[in-house]
Image: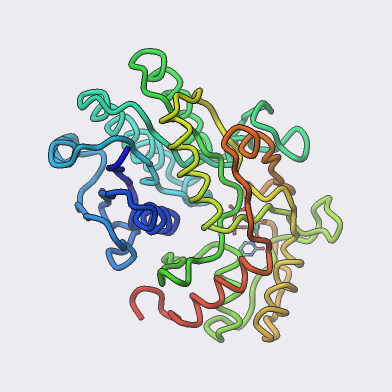
Length: 328
Ligand code: UDP
């Protein structure tokens, strides 16, 4: 397996995937419409600018390169926006996956690693969450990803396209060696927002609710370093290449941190005060999401190596070096 197509490879997680594949000697092709991605983030790959929903564009890309496997990051991923505009999310996320799978079928490509999400679980039955737990998304973003997982199952049966659906918990951190990191407009994620406060670009961080049933009342999440996240994709690709069975895998550290604990950790790492103000809850936020990563460890041999301090320190190095993201 030598040539990998990374759809959405100019985005935050996709660009870290591209850097890792290039480091490991793979030939990498990125297909990205650059609507949220950055061409500057694509290091060590051929970039083809186009939309994965465009069948003619995909046919050209699959015709140009001898693609052995696909990793799909191309999607919209803002929970709040998805609630207001479900058609945008189903249209792009599900539509993109249908078009990509069609091209794979037509060109005889039989392996795909797919970016799924902990949002497929909705309000979890228990903690830590296992892959076999009930999936019942509470927003169109999670529902669009779960719909694609369903489609993947049927494509495996019908066409023999095998898949790993990787359910991410909270991706954060940066790959400072490759000089890539998180740059969203607008930024909605906690760790980059906290670090923008440390940089003086915001005067405070809003804590979205402190009346949840958690130890300090703020939401608990499982933060996973983007570098650990992308190593799991490579392991999943190799697993599928060995003939491994399709299915979902949780990707998280297995540890939960509250919003207040994140702000505290960022104060320690940056030495900055980072003012925090309690605000009202954000719609659709489950109180606690912690992964059981036992399946990814056992089946893929994945070992996440980076804890919270490293996640925040690496993100801090990126944001300090690039206060205006890729535009700076
Ligand atoms: N959060 C917050 N203030 C912010 C952004 C996020 O309190 O400015 C909280 C949010 O309610 C959630 C946690 O931080 O409980 C992580 O949110 P994020 O948007 O980073 O990721 P999500 O869990 O939604 O994927």
